[in-house]
Amino acid sequence: MRADERRAAMMALLMERGQAGVEELSQRFHVSKMTVHRDLDELEASGQLRKVRGGASVQSSAMFQADFRYRQKIAASEKARIAAAAAAFIEPGMTMMIDDSSTAANLAGHLPQRLPLTVISNNLSVISELAGIAGIELMALGGQYSRKFNGFFGLLTEDALRGLRADISFISASAIYQGEAFHQDPEVVQTKRLIVKGAERRVLLADHTKFGRPGLHFLTGLETFSAVFTGDELDPAQRTVLTEKGVSLHCIPA
Image (cartoon, rainbow, N blue to C red):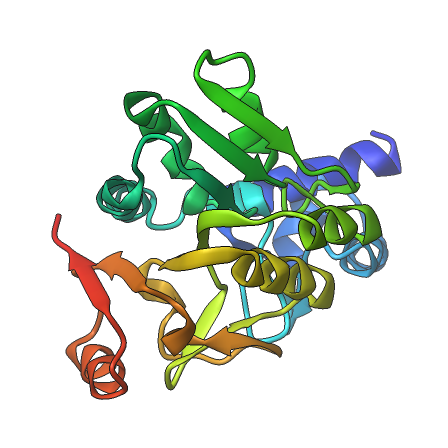
């Protein structure tokens, strides 16, 4: 097995399991531990995983945001509930923005029931699902494609967003702490800030696992949002923190 094939197979395993040890990877791929470490170093350098004691992980941390493929699997049913509830904010004739998040991507399936709409997005899943649907004016934000985030970012994306305005935007954040939203990647933060700035109303979609932990880069305070949608799984202590800060919190039951 070539090195690139082995590293792809390692990533496939990590996407399935979330983390794996060096010893296990060495035995599974019939290579030395030193080779495994070199592979993990390469994958970490490209932002695909983070090395931890004794192995590697693709799970999010304060410094690292998980790959889109892994995030899609986390709290999937909760994310679907959140998107279904948030879709009630969408009215025919609106212009809306949808960010790169896996939670916001669930909105796409609800849009054909609310036509006509203009949809602006840098999320490849949203763009692919809505392309060609009659009644949806789709504006795909260009830029540099990120496989990790399954979206488009960079100067072209940011320049396009600065010239656009929408009635409503839907975004997510990788971490929410003490009434503030965070993300680990500075380029993603910049794009999300512009999506927030470019809309009259803003809605935050975040499953309960995002709450109670800070991220590396400050995105915005939750008071920016007209509504914050999460699952009923959210810890009561976290609910208290947010309601005391005046956040319009919607906890969607299963």
